[in-house]
Length: 170
Image (cartoon, rainbow, N blue to C red; front, side):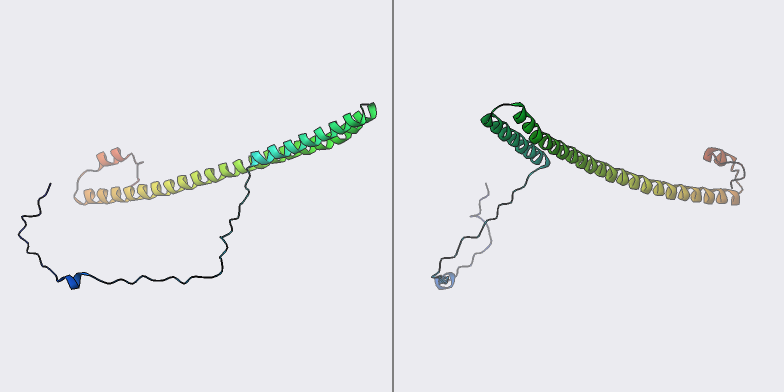
């Protein structure tokens, strides 16, 4: 713990009148009309799975209603045929909706894969360009070194062999 009582810094005291300030409260204007509370708008968002489940549920309910009507009217061959007339389009619509939803999801995932593949191709292309630049710089450095060795009349056979260049490259 630090003891601040023994510091050698002189302190200055101010008269009490300078230390106090009178503050006046700010009055907010009061409105006589009641302001309505801000409206909160609720957004109903559903996912693809929820929409599919809703379509299937509506189809099942429609089939159940048709089956109940058939039971109330009486079970006969005509009522069974009528139920088939109601059930076939409902089942077809539910199956078509499911197929379309599945196709849309597949297209969406394929597009995402395409975007990833394009990003990877771009990264590979950039890396290839960087490698080409680096190789050109190394070749330039090697040519300078060979020229300086030649000017100094030093044999360059060992450098050419280590560089792995074809005959007549320099």
